[in-house]
Length: 331
Ligand SMILES: NC(=O)c1ccc[n+]([C@@H]2O[C@H](COP(=O)([O-])OP(=O)(O)OC[C@H]3O[C@@H](n4cnc5c(N)ncnc54)[C@H](OP(=O)(O)O)[C@@H]3O)[C@@H](O)[C@H]2O)c1
Image (cartoon, rainbow, N blue to C red; front, side, top):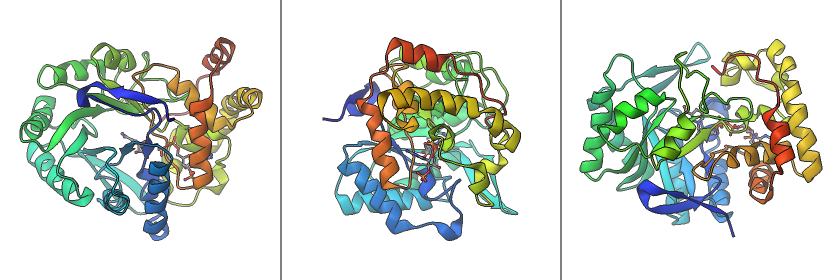
């Protein structure tokens, strides 16, 4: 049986390992290479494998990702917990991904209706503010989420890449059910001492969620594939989002091999892949943590699910905790 974890705000439990749908449509795949059939198939395989927590966003290829999720839900007849997001708009400009923020309440209200339609749902289980918009007071953006909950369009609301200070401000207006931030063996900022995408100190968001009966949802828990030891920077195609990130520039990649080697040492002891160990470490950081690794490949999906069979020893955890910090920025 798939190990489960609770989402208190929804009064339900989901598979301890969720599935992130982004890579089917965005960031690591060019518009020309998008394959809807394969996307539906991998989501359905995840469902068949016991995954009941799916993550998407309207920003992932201008609704394409939500449409693929909607198709997979309709064709499978399954009703997993579905999370989506608003407040970030993605564009491709001169072959590069450019994200802009829009936290205006009218944008969020319209985005919610559009997401419901694309997903084929009457209510969104978990609706995140994808990023805080510096041009719009958080109270206004988050107030729109409170209104959507009151209108029965969303069950619960979450934040992404926020600081403890922002979480407190939002929580005073409407309960924060979840915080989704990057978190993995090479991106531990959300556990304290780190910075968000805007360079602001975030504080210990992982503990904040635990203390407020919320879940913490690590995005990119495999370090966008780096921690698997199987993504080579030389193989990334033009337009792959990773080519834009500090941590993926060749000098940083070389320096960060020490992290992958450490993960591989632990993986060899457990006879599993480094991917499974990277995910097992994230899962071991708290029972309120539900990571959402993404993959477009069946073999990788199954390798990731192996994380649920791994019990890391105290020595393993100490070894992984002691890995060197990553060289290069997350963004
Ligand atoms: N809130 C936010 O701002 C935000 C930002 C980024 C992501 N997210 C969410 O988080 C989810 C996951 O993050 P992510 O996709 O960026 O990163 P990730 O899950 O850390 O890594 C995905 C990458 O790893 C590769 N991969 C996955 N499993 C593998 C395995 N077992 N062996 C080798 N390679 C493997 C995938 O390639 P293959 O397809 O070839 O397997 C893909 O390139 C996204 O889908 C999205 O829902 C949210």
